[in-house]
Structure formats: structure tokens, C-alpha cells
Picture (cartoon, rainbow, N blue to C red):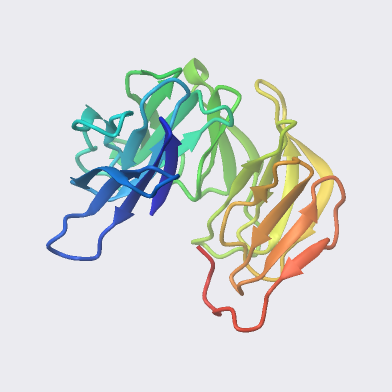
Length: 275
């Protein structure tokens, strides 16, 4: 499921497991009363509900299709972009911290190798699709930074997209002993620094200003197991939490490398990976 908030309504998109119910359903309900104000079946599973300020909520499906949902909880959804014909993976959405820029990234096969189809909505206005050739397949979740986004690739590096400049190679995220199918995660701190996971249990902090050279900061942290979700930066911007494959959640000080300041793994919790 994915959640969004717009026009005073909570938007919930749920993927259905019933074969007769379609791929999923979008619902808008009043958070004060719980009253359902709008509900429609979806043609594909949703991956994100994006709510740019001053604009209607946008629903992104797994093939990169984008639909505008009714802000008042009435009327039909409006298709803004059709799903990509043959994506090679699940689409993802990267949204800036202020909500004014949203990037929809769809992996697909190009003539000379993997590429990304990039769909952008900046300030509520859609942009023409861009096709970005990639040196390797996508290997993690993208995040929005400084008018663009960064994304980990399977060659072990993080790449940055900033519009007309195309993709620029950045720091290595993958550990030398990480498995071939390792996934990299990125989070952004309030000062613009990046937190990069290494495909195992470590997290590093990098400073990579737009147009500048990446610099590794003297900060490293280590979870108890393989990190399975992007680091979650707390509202104060000074701490972040990490979840590992063993079900542990660890809280770290973003300015102090070393041990966790707090961790949770209560008795009776399931042993599976967190989601």
C-alpha cells in the first residue's frame, strides 16, 4: 500500500491479491470521520501517491503510468502519462523534500543497454519524457536532490541526474564483499549530505554538492545485519534510523560515527525482513 495527503483527504492505494479485483484500488477518505469519499479500481499496481503543493495528487503505477486524482474526492482520475510498454523493472518515484518536484523513473531496455525513462513534474507542471542511457542496471531506490535525483547502479556507483547535464558518476556505494545482487539505499540529510548503504550492514556519509566533487565524511555506522530499507532521517535532521534483515531497528546520531544510540528488537516480533 502507499499513502498520500492532499485536499484534506488521505489517499490510500492498495494492491489487491484477488484475481477478480484488478491490480489495485485507490481510495480517498476523510481522516476526521473515516468516510470514504472516492474509490476506483486501478489498471496496474500503485507504487506511489505524490502530492505536489497546490496541485492535485498524482498516482504512479508500477509501469510508470501517471494519473491525476480528483482533489475534491469526486470525479474521475485523469491519465497524464500512459504506462511504459515494456519496462524491465518496477517504476519508482523520487520526490523532493518540499514536494515541488517529483521524478518518475522507469527502467527499460535501450538499443545499447539499460536506460531510464524519466518523467518529471516540477511545480505541478509535467515535463517531456527523457531517456537516459545507463552504464548498468538500477540497483536501488532513487532520491530527489537539488533539482534532480541520485540513484545507485549495479556497477557499484551512485549517479546524479541534474537536467541538461545528464548523468554524472559519483561515489562507490557497494562494499567489496557485497553480493552481486546487492541493493543500495540513499537518504538525504538536511544539509544535503547523502547517507549511502553498502549492500551489507554499513552506512557512510558523503558530501556531494551539485557540480562538485564527492567527499566522504569521517562518519561510518554499522547495523547488526544487512540493511533492507533506506535510512529514515528523523524530523530533527540530527538522527537517522536503519532497519536490518534480522528485524532490528537502530537509531544513530548523524554527526557521531560509531554505535547506535538506541535499538529495538522486542521479544515476540516476527523474524522476517521489515517492510
